Length: 466
Ligand code: ARG
Image 1 (cartoon, helix red, strand yellow):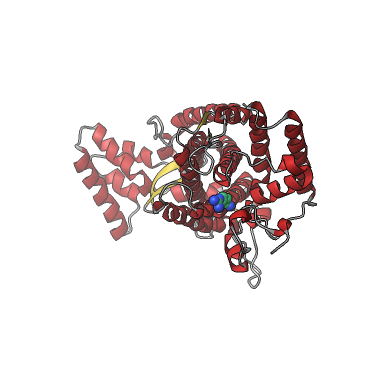
Image 2 (tube, protein in one colour):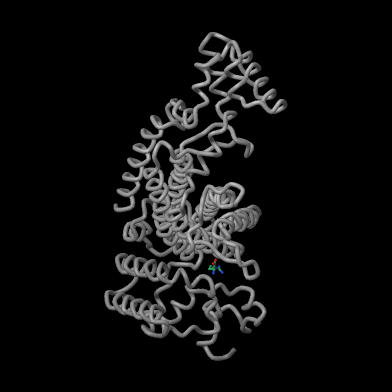
């Protein structure tokens, strides 16, 4: 490589050009192009700062700003011509700015290193994308609340522990259980956003600069809550990426658990849910099949996101201060995790929005006498019997009912401590009405919960609108 324009930006120290094998391994352009917008925004702020401290004349500042605008247009329109030496998006932008603005353009990188630049770009990206993730989680919650609101008090199903029928719960209660997991996810993403909201620009390669840089100027211009306190930390910190990967993995795990229930509920064995055509898939061989692939992918992709998190933590663990090229490995898992999560949120939201619940099947599964067993024991507790004894009495009735093929109702009526009054407890639909504990699964507490959930969504919406 002899021609100047075909050399990497750092060519000065090197006699020979880079080997093809080196470029092939080190190039990050194919994936860090996503940072183009943030790179331009960051560069504009950097240039304004340089002008404000007298390192650029106004004419130079305008020349670079115009060149950055032109680069933005070229990138948007797809006319930007990448060069083989463009290792990454930062290099590509700077090269083009210099082509357009000449000597002024060559001043763009004054007082800056790609180390603080890439950290800045990624923080801008995480700050913006976290909001989009939160918006989409919020949309899914809105679907859950709407579906819960539609439910009457006779929309109930068995609640399960160990996937064994335990006690009936309102369908609204079950749907809202998933909403609360998602509210914690939103809080986690807000935490990610807060930790990302620190400007690293001015840290340079690792130690700051001898030039009169003003990192606060850049931080303010870009709306950061803080600037870095320690230049070494500024260029080596990727905690915000690890946290975003954790938030993404856990959100996806929550979607995976919803997915698992959709798989169960839409099976013929359960029959609690009919999949909407637009959100189900067919089989290439079995004409009768309607498959819950979205739910399965929500479940399957959780593994991938957990992998991104653990992989990246492994990348970080051995790194000495400050910047190491290993850190370039932050981007692919992060971009993929966020993209995967966003797609899953959208698809699962669409499915849940239009899925048809088979309330009769749900009720039939819940209206078995044995799911009121705890109510019978609690009836005995109200007569003064110690709970452990009551548990044994009812347990023995259930066992006899199974072993002797006698309906539980008959045994309850004949049991001296129970009788006709207790029989009322076994009426279909009665059990769920008695779940009165605040936060419990019956109509009273669920109505309250629904209001709390709606208020929560209103506050989230306000935050999103801010
Ligand atoms: N593409 C690089 C990254 O993503 C940019 C920083 C390169 N810095 C360096 N000293 N080589 O981390």
